[in-house]
Length: 460
Image (cartoon, rainbow, N blue to C red):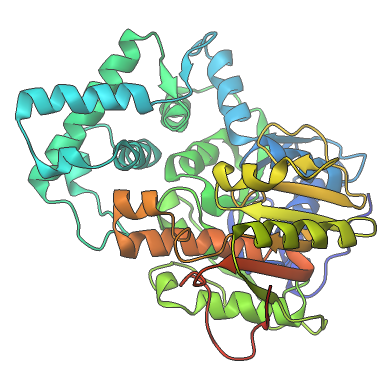
């Protein structure tokens, strides 16, 4: 595939120094992924001074497939991987991981850990929180390298309207410790979230020559601080780390700034031009980013409106769920022959309501191996569509009773649920290049702005 040539500030980013750390922040559709590929190709080119073996990293397997689809067929010295592939490879090389030592589902062990702590500590309201809350907290601890009680008590926790009190944190940490003990007893050395901490710790002691001179990170806002810290140590000391991210799309983990990642930069480059979305879709995305749910997002880049015009996003109120499904399927049938069309959902349960009717469609999932950009239909969750773009996007079930997800409200409270879920919806909206159709039955979700003129509204 031929990549679009760099334009504007993109040219400056391409030729950043091959030494040190660089941070590039951009709005959705500003060409961050394209420039991450360009930057990796440039740093791997043997004819470029300071070039060398380069690692281009993204968040999951689906994005690796998408990156490979976008990339030139020949890229000397460039390896494309997702973070966990890199981490497992490094730990295996150092003799620190064996077969089947990563726990895939921690919910059963966390449930047992909560029960054990409750039996020892007695009843406490914090122990009545859903297991989702504890899973999120354990993920945050691991992602920030907080494996000691004193460090956890001292750490600042953003994004929570009512912070945990020290006594509550002590109980939560005790649950985490009990979970780690139970995991070890089950012969699972790691879960997916603490791999990065293990890599970071090992690289601190590793005096061997580094495999990569340069590391380029795409979708960096979804990497944990420990992931980024480990990658800083994984790059040659005479090489570079280039971080591309958009913190409006930070849908994994909690809100944090790149400044907590251990990167040392002189200047931060910003991409404000939106090359993906039409003016009408970009206006909706901008209106979303100005809503109260985004107020605590660090490092947001306010986009310039693109010049390409298109139809307003369609917002369709349906009489009931059956009508909504029928409408979506009808639109898919009309659009699929000449466009890439994605039907995106909040979760797999909503996905199953429509997916069985989408014959010949491609499901978006983390293990997708290859990418087909010819006209056709894709479907999956907002999470699964992260970093990918389509001609048309359909977003069904955007009603108040589904968004924000009641389970997320139960686990984290309404304010935090609004903040988390609004980023998911923002990701869905900004996947659309040409057309966007949003449907709901019942009142529309409060995650969508109500400003006049944003939508072409209708009823079905």
